[in-house]
Image (tube, rainbow, N blue to C red; front, side, top):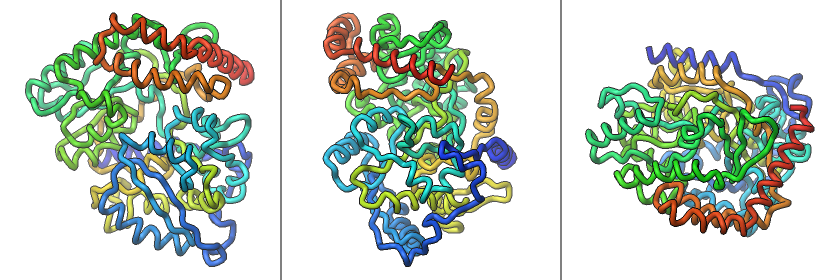
Length: 502
């Protein structure tokens, strides 16, 4: 059954994969494959050392793979040597910002869609249109047109988006250890009451397991605003079923903030939330991977992405996504993973050749993400992939490509069904395709960022009393310019909809 389910999933994605071209207007007629170096052999290229900052801890196999087989192929085909600096997830984003701001040598980097405006305003990325046309035709060929809207600003492509899988309600779901659920006789949940009851049961039966790997404020936003269909972006929200494009200050939705704080505080009191969330909020993935946590914020494909890592420490683990409530799933982005070339890059052309090489063939993609066939992985008769090495190599989600997607032979059939029907009840959000340019409120953003990190998030996470802190925090946000920020966000969103005719 597992192999059949996996085969169905692969077939589904291959049939639905879109390979239209992006804004360069050449993709639809692009050849099946082009040379990364536009006809140049590696021997005609000067040697180049490409530097990358990479999130996560180095694994023994990744270290030997990069130093051995991978760099051997890069040298042979692109006269390129890859050097990677690794940064733990909890430190990655701060280190990335420091390196980019100081101009340290770094050729390219990954970040999520929510940071796009920040990188634009800080000029931490370069325009890619000419590079894509001259050295990235396979990238253009493999990524659908709609995905490029997410990385385009003022008519210029500023990052490479992934060819993403379903995106509805990205980060508004809960990723669950279904093996722990089944151990207490529960197969699913859809209400907050059911979720809390489930945590009570799992906690009682498994005292060494912490319930939440991190805060789950977005799923709670979804739950506590069932009638208003709130969608958040940065510090604001829109109401999906409201006329117009007005954005509202998220923190000023006092009752929503109170509801989330009170609920999280209950869970903190019960020991369901690790205190380290206060100082390591972005480290929930690492915590989930250690096998001692039951739930975290989901991201649609996380059952597939996280299963191998979780199973290193919990061999019987199974994962599945669940939504709280029955709201429509709203889609904000066609893609969530962005690859940027930096202004301090010593050879942007060679970096684009590198990206192009990955997308050029399925074999290149599999080699990059899964290693050497027969040593690191095997392809089963049904098309599923069997990982022989449990160590992560290049993250497959970083270069996500539906056409080349492979799924583990032990993938949960429920996961297959979920993905097949994920977009059945999906609507495009008012925020779909919109990119906020925070340049006009750059000074406000710097102040708001600090208050949000140091004051708002601890309150939302339930570690700070609501009534004695809310008014003071709101006053600080007002003084920092949250009203000006909200006004500018509304202005740009309104202009975006007017220009697009939506």
